[in-house]
Every structure is written in C-alpha cells, then in structure tokens.
Length: 305
Ligand code: SF4
Image (cartoon, rainbow, N blue to C red; front, side, top):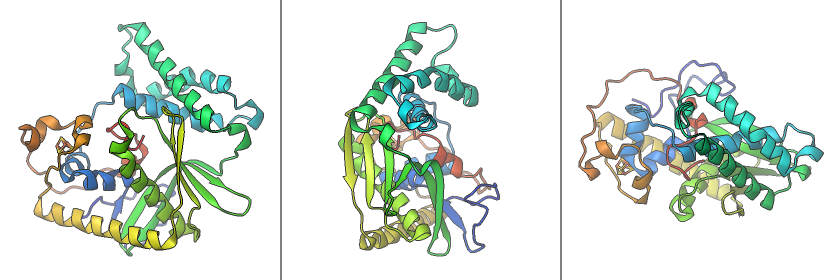
C-alpha cells in the first residue's frame, strides 16, 4: 500500500505524472506523520472529518485576501483596499465551502461574525507592517507545484506565493496566521518550506535563495536560505519518511506521539494517549486525490496556515 494513492484527477500536477510514480505526498501529510503517526492515519487513511475552527477559517480568509490583493494594480494595494476585500472574500468562501457557514449561523450572534472579520483585518495590518505589496509583483500565488523523487514518489503542494527577482532568484513566501505558540510549530513550518524548495529545485534547477515565513500576528519575518547539499539530505529524509509510512500502512501500525500539538488535535477522543480507541483499520481503497488535502488549510492552527 502506498502513502497517498495517485488518482487520475486532472490537474497541472497529475497530467504529467510518470508511470513509475506509485504515491504522492503533500508537505502537510508528511509533517503529520513526522509529528504523530496516528494523526497521519486519522487524516490520510481513516479520513476522519475535522470541523473547521474559527482560527482555521480566519487563516483561510486572510490567505484569500492576500491572494486577491495582488490582482489589484500595484498602486491600489493599500491596507484599506485589503480591508475592503475581507467581507466579500468571506462571503465567497462560505459559498464555496458551506461547512464554514456553521461557524456563524444566521440565527447566531451577528457580533461574532463582525468580530471575526475585524480580527482578519487586524492580521492584514500585520502583513502591511512587514511588507509593502505595492513594491512586489509575485510570479505565482496559490500555485500548485510538484516533482517526482526516487522515481516513485510525487511530492506536491500549494505555495502561498513565489517571488522571482530579475536575476532569477526565487523567494518562497508562506503566510502564517495562527495564534499558537510559534516555537511549537516552527520546525513544521520550515519542513514545509524545504519541501517546496526541493520541488522547485528539482523542477526548475534553482535552489530558492530565500524561504520566508511571514508571521502576520506578530508582524515578523523569518527568512531562511537553503543550499543544495541541504536539499539533497532533505530529499533523503522525505523518501525515508514515505518508506516509513508505507511500512506503517502495511503493518497497520500507527502509534500516537503525544506532544504540545495534541492541544490542537481534533482526534483526542480516539487517541489511546487520551484514553480513546482508534476505529478498525479501514480496508484498502482508492481514496480521493490527496491534493485536496494539500489545498485545504490544516486542522492544527499555526501548523501550516
Ligand atoms: S491527540 Fe496527540 S498523540 Fe493523539 S493522535 Fe492527536 S496528535 Fe497524535
């Protein structure tokens, strides 16, 4: 059994998948397994539903606004313009993802929705404190990238933003909106960025010059510059991780690994570390394209959002 079965869903990633590819892995799911193998199982094999939280919804909304902001002419990318995008983007998201509507039901307290939109606008102020979008022209936004490693594994995911300098240098930018303690998630965030750096290096032949974590709540930037040797080692790590996932799947053995991140886990009730019992291991099936997982915001606030 593979880590994440590859389907025939048409997309820019799957259209050119070589026949040798047996599985795909997104940075979110890889990081799940690294964080806690049982969490990986719950999300990727059992595919247990996870209710969106207000914090995740806020992250999704802020990402949507920042994506749309760059549709505007450079001179129009003001804090006010970003603020004007908040409510319309929320309405769009609720239409496209009806499960979000349950966060602020029509018969609920209207002040809660107002406060939610205000809190998203506050995060956008954090963005403007550290970047001036009038001076940027991103090459790509919310872009799907993928590469094959080890002949058999497709690694893929969505970049928040890719900047390309006139000399061809790449900068990968990831917006972080979570309120969780940063130190609890920074390693996971960097893992995700290295994942993207590896894909870009393998597909474009260029090691990104900068991997940028942009913490909107703290209005801080964390830049990291990988090198080729590091990405070679990272590729080995990803392949080893995939093999470990395959082995765990074959043996149906995904153990809990409790950590501070359990505080953000949706599945404590089923977790032996919290007195629960996981459901029976599901029979192998061809599940929906895991690319959808990479596209959605993660369930652990601050992890990938
Ligand atoms: S509660 Fe913690 S140990 Fe249990 S599945 Fe979730 S992350 Fe893993």
